[in-house]
Length: 297
Image 1 (cartoon, rainbow, N blue to C red):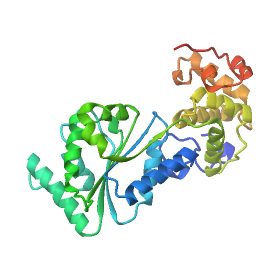
Image 2: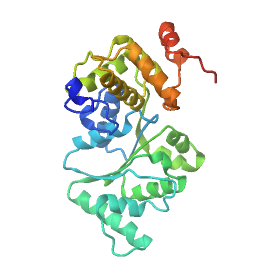
Image 3: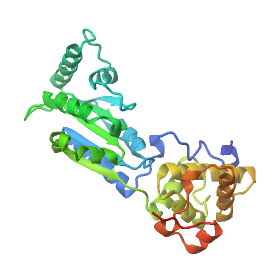
């Protein structure tokens, strides 16, 4: 709706995880390097975690685009707690049709596929997005599946991507053997204020707009209210551009953002943007202007 008004080629803050908009903050660049190292070093298990909306899926899709022909990828992105077995989901992700619907046929079809790909000079990478949903039983099944690897030959690699509770789950005594096989891991934290500023300017530029569209104080306010979480930054920036278009503002300043939040909160919307001025170091003037109150606990 506002694209033509601001001369964008596309929406700069769309919620879909488009790798074209990936902003390489220092930690996102480090995470990408970690993923590349995991493949090159033949790590059997690799772990990538981050808070909700931290950009894990966008980074993952960018990484998968960089893989060469020597890696066969099976992506399982709809994990949930009702998984009874990992085998049928892995078969589907890799496009394998087993001889029959028995558990033995499923297992044998997967092992045969891994070995066959290895014989062709290719490794298989199974990627589990939202892996925090996997039960300890399913994770243990995945560990047993990795036994296809020997000390000298690696036919299967596994990448687990999920929220921080995945790390908590892996620290439990029942998954000790699994945790010992995780040789490469990384955790994505929130963006700093400098990274938030660069992130917003990067997305504006990629979309074909002016990098100076958001005023400096507006960016400080956005960082404070979103705690540096990319998904929340996208939501707030997208709304700000919509309001700017509706009110025919040439840019996004602090007053406009205050209006956006007051208007939305009066409608009972946007609870995720609760004020966190004290925690985020937002200037007192910004907090007072926006009607921010401190939180406890």
